[in-house]
Amino acid sequence: MRKLRDVVIVLRDVWKIYKTSEHTAEALRGVSMVVYRGEIVGIHGPSGSGKTTLLRILAGLERPDKGEVIVDGYNLNLLDENGLALIRNTIVGYIPQDYGLVDTLTVFENIELPLLLAGYDKLSRYRIVSEIIEYIGLKGKERLKPKNLSGGERQRVAIARALVGTPSVLLADEPTANLDWYNAVKVLDLFKKIRDDFNTTIIIVSHDPRVLEFVDRSMVMSDGTLKEVTPRKV
Image (cartoon, rainbow, N blue to C red; front, top):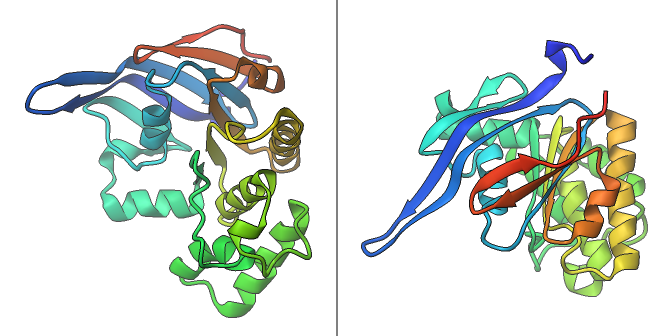
């Protein structure tokens, strides 16, 4: 059995409701989950089911309307915006579906950006980014712009940027959606390598059920609710 200290994510009865003058949409409806250190968890569901909202709440980019969110011992509900930014710089790496790369920056500069914002000195930034570029297999492409990369390479840059703060949690939103299956497998294998090398907890959300072949545990999200479909491995 896993010990309590191995728990890295806890959600308790989390709700997220979006309201306009004409409509109310319940994006998350009473979502609860526990994720353990070193797990790769896949969340499958159609577009609009609440997957991205769930990841954004875990990353501290949105706040729940109700419920408790704990990530690596920190209750995100109790943190101000500066505290949430610190969580994103040090504990949670978030990989958006559209890569989130800056078109005018090089591969090196895109990966370096979080370190620059966090106040790292130039020598430290160079060392960390160079090591990560080699780790993800993009050595020699440091000075290229995103437009000169393939979809798989752009995804690797997005993953590298999320890794620079040595997070304990990686959150990946549809990381294979824009890739053919050959390149999708390479990206999913990279996630497994990251988990094996660093004991990183990884949550992958996807509408593609094939992604679930690469995870330890899978869940299904539908209409804002979450259900586990495979047992936790112990």
